[in-house]
Length: 130
Image (cartoon, rainbow, N blue to C red; front, side, top):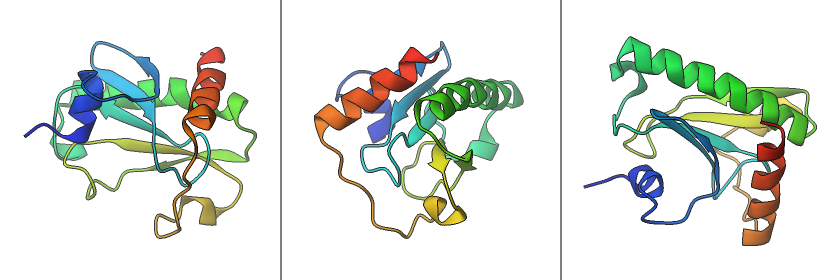
């Protein structure tokens, strides 16, 4: 059964897509820890990030770097945090999070519930810096 990320990649369900390449896609987390929380996902449905081919993992990291540079310009922060957890969705992905403190990347915190308009606005802002 396709993951929810595969459904976004295939445009079967809506997603706030920031950018994509032939192999990777970046879109907003719908339940972010911080505004601008972006997910970087390989288009190939692979459950575990370290099961990926080296070439795809390298592409994904370089794509993450490009997105993080735009994200840092769009959302004032001290750093862009990076996390790979891999338990919540059976599809490898990297979290990019604007950080002010280390607590901003604490996944046990309550998630935000931004409106569609807020998500569209932050997605457009991030894209404007690409």
